[in-house]
Amino acid sequence: MQKRKFWGWGIEGGGPSQEDIDQSISSVEKRLGTSLPRTAEPPKENELNLPSIRIKVPATLSAICRNSPWERAAHHYGASYRDVVRAFRREFPKPPDWVAYPQSEGDVSSILDWCGDNKVAAIPFGGGSSVVGGVEMPSLDSGNYEGAISIDLSNLRKVMEIDKTSRAARIQAGILGPDLENQLRPHGLTLRHFPQSFEFSSLGGWIATRSGGHFATVYTHIEDLVESIRAVTPSGILESRRLPGSGAGPSPDRMLAGSEGILGIITEAWMRLQDRPKFRASAAVLFPEPNGFLKGAEAVREVSQSMLFPTNCRILDKTEAFNNGVGNGDSAVLILGFESADHPTDKILERGIEICRGAGGTIPDNQINSQSGESSSVNREGAAGAWRKAFIEMPYIRDALVGHSVVVDTFETCITWDKFPSFHKNVTAAVEKALQEICGSGSVSCRFTHVYPDGPAPYYSITAPGIFGSELEQWDEIKAAAADIVISEGGTITHHHAVGRDHRPWYDQQRPDIFADALRAAKQNIDPGAILNPGVLLDP
Ligand SMILES: Cc1cc2nc3c(=O)[nH]c(=O)nc-3n(C[C@H](O)[C@H](O)[C@H](O)COP(=O)(O)OP(=O)(O)OC[C@H]3O[C@@H](n4cnc5c(N)ncnc54)[C@H](O)[C@@H]3O)c2cc1C
Image (tube, rainbow, N blue to C red; front, side):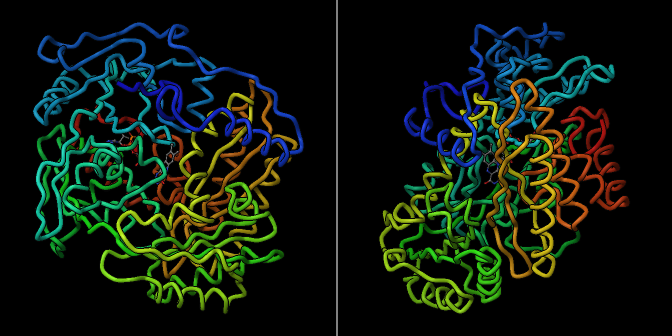
């Protein structure tokens, strides 16, 4: 069986070839104008020196609980830059005492009962791809808890039932993306939810964090694909009624979506499915600098308001385009794509292209692709294909850059179109200033991950040379500068990465006080012992 890395992204021995990694590192060296010698090696299992275990699990749970150093270390962190740096430093100060692998919903209930009776913090763990400290154990110094347990849902991984007529399925929450799609494929169906972390993230994690899929418009947010949710809470089972829509008061599903494990453990959900797409068409549109990115953003706004609903409508600034192998660094590139299970999409693409040309875009002849058939490779060729490859390899490359002391991370937000130009200018300027002051140099680039008729979700990537041993402190300062400017300019602290523990200070600023009180009251009622994911969304 393939073994996940306990310190970073992916499977041991998996990911891009060493040659590809070396090439990426040398292109970052060129970009930053400095050499990046290797400063650290990933930790090895035999180097783990973990604090001792504070609690015993009862005999009734021992068959589903494990506590080997690997298990505890692999459930210590999520998968953020900050997590990988701490792992490279061999810092694992507060691992879970135990990792539980429930085999059934009954097991989940038993674990929560035991946690409640023994003041043990219970941290739900799906794929562990959180980039916001969502799966970390709380600090136990406060004396509020006797210990902590990570509840890994990976054994709940079946598509239980398919309703072909309504095109929906009942699916267990611990299933990871590839397994989920593999179980739906023989039925000609797909959930079609593809976050960049697809390979190692779970349905329950997606719902708990309100994740955003790879597609740019409509049917891309997990909560829009949810028909009903079933969760185990410390107060019993919370299950919503399976309905295509309902106006019966505030939605119970919407309460659980985005609850980040503080109200209950999602065990299964009925999900809306789609037929597998057969027709695809895409184009890469160039917007030469200067002003290419803002002109391209204008084109995206027009497309987003045209009701064409592209599956892909991703403007990359010239640096993003170059870094992802879809441009030569002179132009912003807009990747525009459409797909359908029902009808050819060429005509819709033509109209999208017309809009882009009207906004000043140009299209090289070889950058329009159209194909039909389920195995169509239109997304694997040309600019779209280069983009896809870079997208999948990114987390592996990021981990390799950590070993060269590069500060490399992303932050994402959302803002209305009227504010976007000044927002983008001020965010970029503030982060560039922070990189100069903190790292001496560095680059900020931007792309849109999702677009709405009323605004885009800009996604910023930063790369800077760090100082070996000080990368975390440098990152902290840069992150704070970025988050401060995002909030002061009217954006959200997160569009799809969630709040976790890391975004709390800024989430608290943007969350209305009365809503915070209501959430606290809900938490107090549902989880009176405050065992579930303490510190996430609310203070313990
Ligand atoms: C390289 C990379 C790329 C990413 N790309 C995207 C992206 O494109 N779109 C996006 O939205 N996010 C992205 N993320 C962030 C992350 O993948 C998402 O937040 C994802 O939804 C987390 O799913 P998971 O199963 O890994 O959850 P985990 O990381 O295991 O947990 C996340 C949170 O949900 C809680 N939780 C997990 N399972 C359950 C459950 N069954 N019931 C209750 N609570 C639960 C956890 O306690 C935690 O608070 C990315 C992360 C990485 C590292």
